[in-house]
Length: 570
Image (cartoon, rainbow, N blue to C red; front, side, top):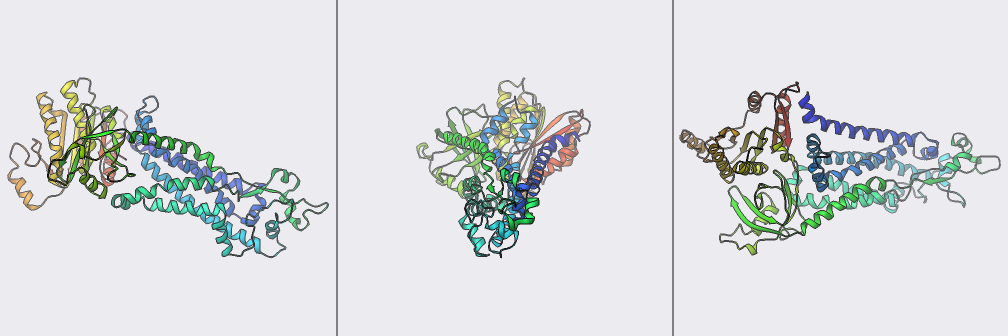
């Protein structure tokens, strides 16, 4: 149970608090419009749809306040690096920023749907009340404001019947027009954010996501028209709607109830979102300032399996293991930024990324760096690069544990290249102060060529550990998940050789996929009473498996073994 709390509990706690606040706001504002006498006459026109429109509007304000905070990368990195305010558990929660961002986005979509449907009924009934025959309370209320010294209740001022009247309200009133615009913007943002679109058409995702600017502008001015109106406090003192509504035909006559007076609700959304919008503006200014700093590409290395390595230098650049940066290449696109994990170590005098060629942008970067040409590329011909970052990830906490499991799938091995390089440098100089005592490294690849660019690092680390009589420090298991019969025959023939025929390492390549339950049980048996960090950079399916194994193989006793799951998320 203790490890379940550590792996899931903080996230569950945050989610429950967030959901609880949404439920509270919905119920509170529903009652605030469904019960008070201030909105008695508004409810006569609109019924329960009034409260059903205003309650989700409050929740929209709350969630729109939250939606920008998880994507303020510099703010999160500052909090993550501040030991004064961030414990390990809080840092792990900050690493789930994009998950929370997506949850809030779906909540915004839900409340937008409720708010929109409720207002469709409100508009229909308001238009209908304006054109219906005289003699009803709704008709009298809709007619208020047509004469001098009267304030109106029904925001529909023209007598145009439905459906034309509803369309007139939607496209000529500020609330209707901004509502249409922000709803369309939200639909485009959400539909272009699906995993399929992000992976196959990243440019579509990138550009449509910036419709959030239009969304927030529309959101702030949406309530400026003050179409939701209620009876004023002064009018309530002399006109009790519970009593006077029964004698509405005599309003304004001597000895009868005075004509009620109404006013619109002031816009409130700006009070919710002005703080986060200011923080995000500062975030974008910091990003722009960073993007203007000069970055020099010192070396381009072409690796097998459609992978290139960019080694770069930038004045004042400081990094920690496992961090990532955003990269823009103006020669490819002046607007697009793409995240890449740093594969260099903090001890090196440059920083590097490995880029796998899998899409239009990476293909264009590959060509811009001259990698499609056979001849040597002069340094001055290399494209200009803008860099934003570095930003913190879960891998920064690797050195906080004595024992860790590092699991990389395919190109997902990149953050652990930084970790293992840093370990190598520390052992080359002074490893006495290193808290980390044992690394279990797992790398899963579909193709043999993918191993080649990383094998040199593992060979260097393997040699270094043996020279220092600490060969047990690093246990690595490389799994080939895809092969054919010809390869299998070749591997079988050379299986007895001292070094592996694929990687050149003493540890032989394994075929298939790990039995994670056996792996966790074996490691738990070797390190009783330890907190073991499990770090993954790979697909969601593997993340679910490792998270479940981390929970199921941890002991309830606080003094027992505990696996703490961490996943790269950017």
